[in-house]
Amino acid sequence: MIKVHNTLTGTKENFTPREEGKVGMYVCGPTVYNYIHVGNGRAYLVFDIIKRYLRYKGFKVTHVQNFTDVDDKIINRAQEENKTVAEITRKYEQAFLDDMFALNVLPPDITPRATEHIPQMIRMIEKLIEKGHAYQVDGNVFYSVRSFPEYGKLSKRNLEDMRAGERVEVDERKRDPMDFALWKSAKPGEPAWDSPWGKGRPGWHIECSAMSLEYLGMGFDIHGGGQDLIFPHHENEIAQSEGYSGESPFVRYWIHNGFVNINEEKMSKSIGNIILVRDILEKYHPDVLRMLVLQTHYRNLIDFGVEALEEAKKAYERLENCIFGVSELLEKSTLKVAPAGTQREMELAEYYMETETRFEEAMDDDFNTPRALGIIFELVKELNTYVSEQSAFPTPAGPAIAKLGQDTLVKLCQVLGLFTFLQEEEASELEEEQEPSESGKILQAIAHGHSRKLPSPEELIDLLLDIRTKFRNRKDWEMADYIRARLEEMGVKIEDRREGVRWKVE
RNA sequence: GGCGGCGUGGCCAAGUGGUAAGGCAAAGGUCUGCAAAACCUUGAUCACCGGUUCAAAUCCGGUCGCCGCCUCCA
Image (cartoon, rainbow, N blue to C red):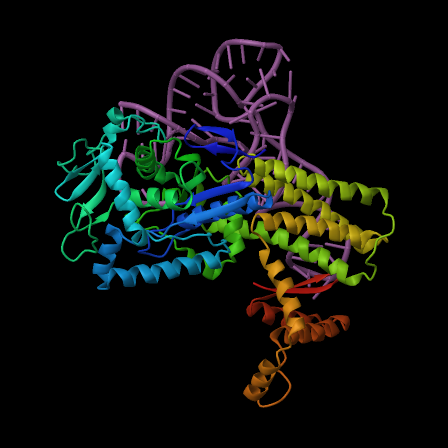
């Protein structure tokens, strides 16, 4: 049984979806006016991990994630850059998709745009007015928080305790300072739609209510986002959706991820410490960023910095080394089918199964990825030990047992979204074998002026290492080290192991 | 002023009643031409005080410190 911390109740609850075996999940998407930063990146990684795990557990997940493509910030941005609103939103929507792809975040099933759901929003606002939850003033429509007695139930606050207007001026046309805009009348030059209240555009909160209800309906399972969305965004969504439908709950489980700080400071524009996802990905493998996210429970704060990234990178390399280490062992061995294993090997096989069980227990417990990683690293240690045992004293069942362990390790990592490129490589290798693409060969031949293709960089590196081995055999350390040093300058790292030479690109 | 979170070995981070997972770093060792990787060994009584309990990092009360939200924000 999966347990989930529900912001609404403040407790961990058993996760029972509305419909058995199916999960409807809505994640608040980006306002497309800028490149996303690592804080945004964390949020989407967190929900990607949750989604992958739910799918692994057999749930059919429908993931809806919006694009907010009408908003003050977008309009300002367009003016700053002297572009149209559409140009801005198109540009940053694509940038978002690129970043998500680079992060290896699975795409949502439905990605609705706010501007394509204006009629639904207008319908909802009309109904809210009709029910006395909203009122119109000068072409604006405000939601009356006093009309919804449960207002504040998500963020655990009541209207009296809040200091509205302390930091921001209150529109005096509101009946209550906490009332929020459902519809804003348009100023000249702003994007606007016709409505019963005149030309205008929707407020921020109404779009998520309208779109989540459109695609998932009342009472869907998971609504997620960063902790900063709890108030006012999600609080207002509840007020709108439950006020509109007269039903409760709007959402069964509210899940909110923690923040990312930069050097113990909140990341914010005013401090000027924004770090973009794309800048990190220039220097680090996306799995390293994912690793960093996995190392802390999703509800806790992450202090982001070079040290944290480097540490995540080292930890990731430990996983990598283990997987490659087993592969090397397997390449050396010819025996593929295992005769009866030793006692130790039987125990190991059993340990692998336990590892899977313990991994699931950790993940079932409110997606406790740090604990799950701990279990994975215990497996890594066992496997590493076994591989070095096998290098020294091979046993008949060795390769099969090692492979089984590696399969377990890779499988669990992939549930978390790590090393998924290994799958893709396998798949593409198969494809390549099937079609040596006649036309492609010809094109290449023409391009290079001869019928034989050029050797790949991989082949050339192997050649260099071959030469280096010859020097090493002659104990010509100077030449051997020179080759290693020069390759390292180019980012190719060399490791001499008992099983042979390994190289990888940094 | 209200609401919420946090304080675990040098750093990061799990653990929410039975005497502390894991990662990084450090030291010593094994292996090795060197380097790297890997393996072995070494370290915390859990901010502080008081209470409940046979038993608490874990529950309750208090103190101190840090942070977030109450405005747009993942």
